[in-house]
Figure 1 (cartoon, rainbow, N blue to C red):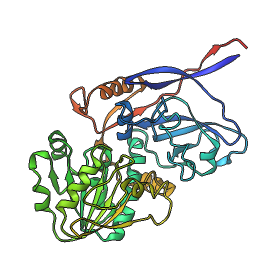
Figure 2 (tube, rainbow, N blue to C red):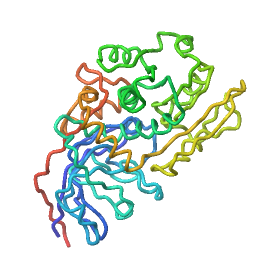
Figure 3 (spheres, rainbow, N blue to C red):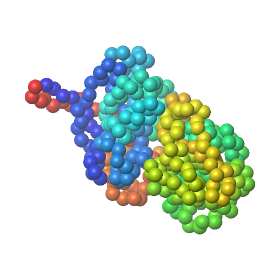
Length: 382
């Protein structure tokens, strides 16, 4: 029996390397994709560093692909050659979480199961985003669009963004276009090095803060107008940043728990609130409009809380349109572009080190360009 193979970035513990994988054939309702550009996400870094227990050996849930083959019963709109984006979170089937529970896009071929295809999670994408790696920003920008769809209803006048990874920078860049020019942006960085990087950018926030500014700096820049908060933070920092915002903001506050949280996360500043449950209440764009929880702090202040796992398909389409309309606003966030082999070396480095530098440059977004595979096969006994 002849078995076709393709190349994939495979993680085993903290080891990351390119290995051959058997290439599946799509069964009824399934599609086989050839990823073109895939991005490395903050949650991917947590998996590489052993901070999450997600089982998929091949990660990657951001990017675009071409349909290579479709099984019987698949909509003809998803025929071979169709350029697509995959929504990585299924609103009804928790077993489908691309790049977390099943193998993702950091390989030359990815099989998408029938349940995801039936749910419309594989979407044709007409916008040409490939040449400069912008496709790696598509899914994270969609999460920002989701957050802003709630914050804009709250009528916020100041946006606080915690986190200096990809999503944090995207939120700052997109605020002026998606929330309107009257919204002031304050970017709270995780490190002084992150703030230094932002200072050299044309599309930075109105106010930049870092740990060196001390605990009172945020309070001094926040006024009495309604404030929105995006916690674009890793799961071990989300609770601390939430409490920082609750202490610093004296007035009306709406918080997006976008960053991960431990399942038992609670804060004495929000008595009786199960934060992980608030974050999980919105999944894959459902319900619509998003559920927003109202809480009271220990000091008697009212706060609105929401979160989300995944996005709706229309958030992805909106993000694609935004990247096509204003690519210069986002292009410099793709700081590193690599093929599979170099990407594996970068990922191995990031798995072993907490810094975000590679070859002397700060890494914001790694875009992996995946070239078409050279046909290979192995013969196995039948």
